[in-house]
Length: 425
Image (tube, rainbow, N blue to C red):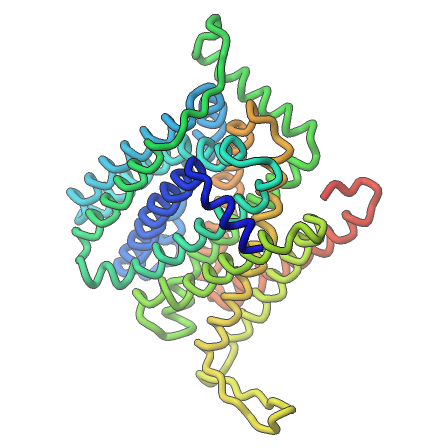
């Protein structure tokens, strides 16, 4: 298992993409949670936090498909380079206007728009850089580093604010994004040739988008994988929305600690889950791994909601084989459950992402990932807003329970659907 990871990591072309991903993701995740903390500190509203996260998500609904259609016709290395370079200047603008929360919302929208062009060029570059039999391992490694950078970004957000202050924290993000720009610049060119007669205009963009949508409609495995990837990413966004309120109302901890005590364990679980799938996933059907991820996610959310009902700040559990009670604090139980939640989420994400790349022709990958970012921004709009508003109305615990039940029903449906003759995954 380790040898397969080492072989992929030795690939210099993939390694530059990989390092660039790590640096840029740390910067973006740090940015998102720094803004989440800032908004919640000023408003103490889960709904306001939802609006901030939607500033990241809504542009994907509008620009995701368009960006995916265009990226397929350009050198993906150049797209990655210029997107990172523009984001460097935008982070400098965050540094200049750090006091004005309204300008921060506007800058968040702009950096999200640029990111919509970055996403369809990043992961779809992987099949150009590794052999086909290394694709699952490369995706697993990419997922591990994605969530590891999420851990670093989220976990460091609170301490970094305390260390650097509300203004200078943006300069740290700028340096990280500049490093990402350096790494992708040293990638090999990934060109898609187009006919000289083709003119990039509105008709051309519309035609490429239609071609991508037709391709997705006619390929059931691609369609189902897109739905699963959307679900996986929407769940992460929902957890980010509920994290400050969960830390404040349930765990009774400082808001800056929410970055590493709430989202941190979930991100660690995502990393370890991705590592397990990459190392052992070839032995099992991808559909079986995904189903386990869906059902496990649902059950974990339901158990997590139980913590909010505990009258005392701790839970005493009798361990039979040592014939003694062990006292677990609510925080300890929450950390364990959040870790398990992340673990199961990776069981959905990694196999679905591998199917997307393996079953999609290179000329269509940008468009498929463009649709994915649009679906993530559009579809996740509902659970993000729903969870934030619902948490303000009925509380974080009941919200987690409701989401868990919805996912459990979806998992049971997926189980019976897999047993039918129309099963694809």
